Image (cartoon, rainbow, N blue to C red; front, side, top):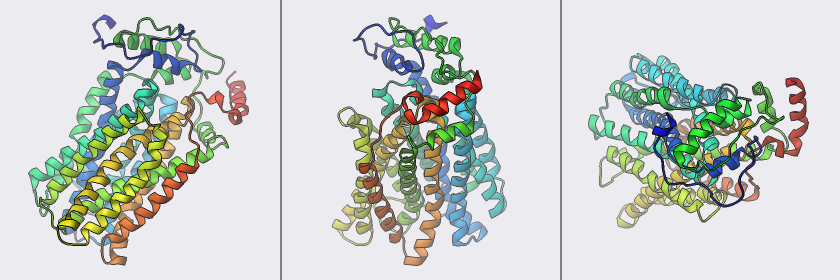
Length: 490
């Protein structure tokens, strides 16, 4: 069946000696040599459905909050809580999904994620009050969170290093943006003024990307060869790598997979994975990336919640629904620019600069929204575009770096810790926004807080040395832990 696979021009590395038989220590070298092609593109598309569903659901929920509040006469804290519970669910899902992806494989959490999103999104349309909607939306968020760490880990496992930021950007950012565009189009179709939205119909329609993703992922998504090799499934990993070689036109690459003594025959426990990312070798890196993801989520989801309300009360050349659609489109240049910049600048340098760029754009937006005339209008539009563009690039590099700084054996757990910790920013963002609106009699206080947090984030990243680690055995501090695990397995 491999002979029927589509072949691309060889995109790997042809220089250098023939590779030795592969062990977990040089598995990454084999992926580098095989290059980028159809298998990676298929995985990117299928993993992207989880993030597209996330973008679709979150934009819908932020946009219909006013309609739900009017129908049920909700108070300010309840309006914010309807969105916050989604992020609480995502946090819970990330907490479970990371260890699950390291223990059972990357594909299982992705399929369970799609099933949960479809089921609970449809149920939410039948809710009759605040508490029932809050409970169901928590489960929708948990469904998102269950699959997201495994999608990022899957892409990182099978993609050559020079393509990783592009692949992660396509999965977590471009797909999310496509989901937003889908929802913005639904909102525009339903009510361009966003005054009388049919939120129940929108909740049902928001589940469509997950339905498509579930069917396609069940049929075509393959398990990660890195997971298979790490857990002793050498023959299965070899068969999968052979298909990659044929598809990418890299038949000359040697990949006779062998089982190293460091490969566990039984999966590592969740406790062991958490201990590894909390060890002295990774502790500060983990904390820094958690805070980075926290600020990323606070900025992105906070503005995603704030912009529909800001534009509903601000004079712009277009309708509020069109402003959301334009904003979703503005995210794409940042998602494209980040991988392009990474070809000439280290992606960690880009990561350090993104918070500073968002802070500057937020200041321009804040000034422009509080004045009248051409100058203030220009600042408003440029600031809005700058926030969307820079956040798009921030998403791409943050999640790429978050998955790269952890060894393969604990990569899904480490990525989940960063994503889950970051979701706290998403949980707090609508609540902080609503409370600051009350405290400052306007939404400006939220943007001031956001600017301060971004400047601190930039300082932390500049002071930290971030290095990619593929093999857990390369970390001296973890070798005693690994040795004890090998004795237990033996």
